[in-house]
Amino acid sequence: MMNKKLKETHVNPHLSVAPKKIRANSCKLVVPKNISDGSRKLAVKYGSKEIEYNLIHVKRKTMEIAVHPDSTVVVKAPLQSDITLIERKIIKRARWILRQLNYFNQFNPKTPDRCYVSGETHLYLGKQYRLKLSEGPENCVKLSRGFFYVTCQNKPTPDITKKLLNQWYLKKAQIQFAQSMDRCWMKFNNLGISKPKLSIKQMQKRWGSLSSRGTVTLNTNLVKASKECIDYVVTHELCHLKHNNHSPEFYELLNSVIPSWEKIKHKLELSMV
Image (tube, rainbow, N blue to C red; front, side, top):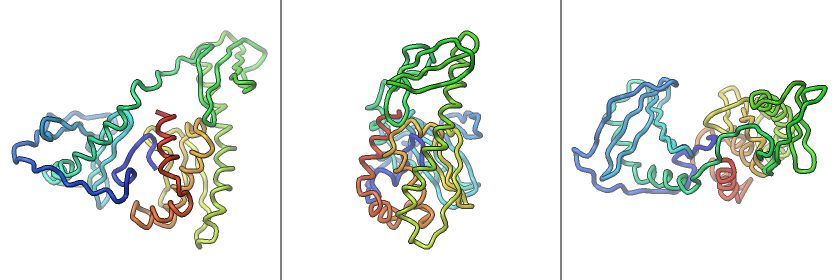
């Protein structure tokens, strides 16, 4: 599943967009720029608008277009894919791409970067808590009565506070994610599939993923979301054990387990952007 990321099939599996007729000269290619993840930054012209996107060539059979909350469009294409075919696919889905960009733009201004100073609010399980920093005999983080109490052996600094808070989040994630897996698995243990292993790590673009070996990996930052949202992400990945795609069968299974998944997904995107 995508972290803060809206894949084409995620909005509406039955979405069918009929693109406007595009003139042959309406597609404009900008000078490629290499990005740290190995992708190239390109753009295509769609009417009066220009759609910038990051192109990544990967070992896969199909092309994927994903729109992220930071307004980046990422295109993953099979190795040796012809750029003309890639552009045609992007133009064909241009209206959908622009619609998703407009959707995420409604959340601007986004949450400002954290400074890790006293009085600043931070999320845990969907609720906001204020930081209270102090010096003490040991480095520790405690959550009590609406506050994160962060104690440092030396004078608290943003870097030390961030490190301590991230360590605290990781410990809580291990507990909360394991409990979520146990809750969600109860609805899957009669489908003839094995319970997956659980892994936790920081991820930039995904809330969760399922490996080819059947390991569910969850983003540490997901512990900042509500339990309902955590269960949605876990359930989404568990559905992939049965359907390793976003086919109608996948969404049929997801709907049967969480009928209100679209509302929960929207809540996750709204609260965590």
